[in-house]
Length: 93
Image 1 (cartoon, rainbow, N blue to C red):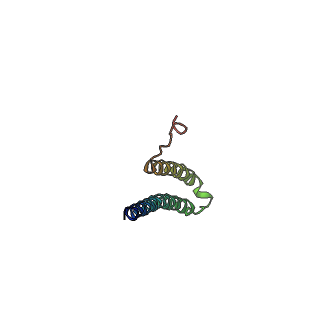
Image 2 (image 1 turned 90 degrees about the horizontal axis):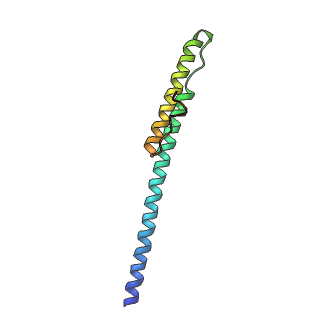
């Protein structure tokens, strides 16, 4: 009778460990999915910029700088959300 109880306790412990492992895996996959969705949104936003004609080159150059600043802000925000900070020193004068 004692061996049966011990066996059942070990079985429950294995089941609990397996359940904990699956829950941890689900959490990691959700984080990865969220990160990939954000990357996809940024890439779709960046690729949606049509190439304008020559008369818009100055405006486009200005918007490219704005776009680069936006991309850097998004990258920093994603890093902040994931708990990793981006060192701004290479971009700060």
